[in-house]
Image (cartoon, rainbow, N blue to C red):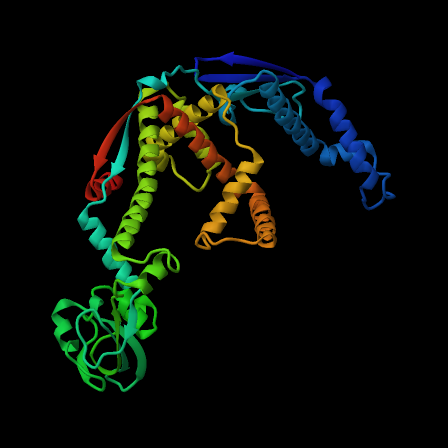
Length: 442
């Protein structure tokens, strides 16, 4: 078997595979003999079916299988041995091959198109990237404090309802069918809200149910039915108030300090507000790191110039996702796909050039830390640490190591972005939370 590489340009090439009878026939004969040993056919003893009959019955299918196996192995080996960097997979070029006569043809030629990884140069120092600092102003601090007070507030049952309460009611339909449910007044349409305000336990409100809420799923949850069934509910329903529920804000004091930061860690309001501000800054620091990573990716893709074999990639996407995506859909998504592919090529090139590697121990530690964060950062005993290690090792092996590869890619991306930020032209930029939210939404 002979394989030749024919380069069309810097991004596209074709493998020409020539195969003679001497290449494949020994494998076909050996496979026929293997079939003969186990073949069972009427009129012949097991394993005694004549070779000529086996050839007539199975020769063509065995020939096709063996040639396809040789092609697959031969092309894979050729690519590895010649260190060809390709995108996607080799694609058969049936136009070059023409029609194949499997009955009489002895020599074969096959053609496979390749998309080649382009060579490119880069200068990380030319990249201009913003290093964001998200400012924590009084408005942000006040909003966070109000959310904390609500989060750690206590539930009470007042005598009279006000806006923001929830009402546990017995609900009776026009036909007399009763059920129980909780109405959250913040979800009630504004024009109906006065009907439920300043009401006491035992009060009965009668109103049209179909327009009580803006969203059908809210009514569905209240009535315990499917969303499509809720849309069909009409008529005046009676709501008898069984209980009024209210969440009172927590008071700023030692109880709240302990719930937020641990017992006796904070003992006065000034320290509490200072630590709350530090917590907000830490959270926004992670958000700013996300923004920096996004800017690094965009700047790298925009600044490092090289082309990709777009037509080959469109064809490859269509073939590998046969039946799942149309040519029209690929046309709409190809630009975004090419940007993602370009970033991956840049990332892998930098990792290779700067010898950035991710060890199994790093992947394991990252996965363990992700799991631990779900427990709020609590301390673990040595026995628990061992259990977590076993759990994570099992998770990383599941689904053919999918979670392992995802974590490895995240860690490699982090190393590459750190490398770029250490060499690029970084500009400090202070932004407000509103400006941050606007950038994120873009």
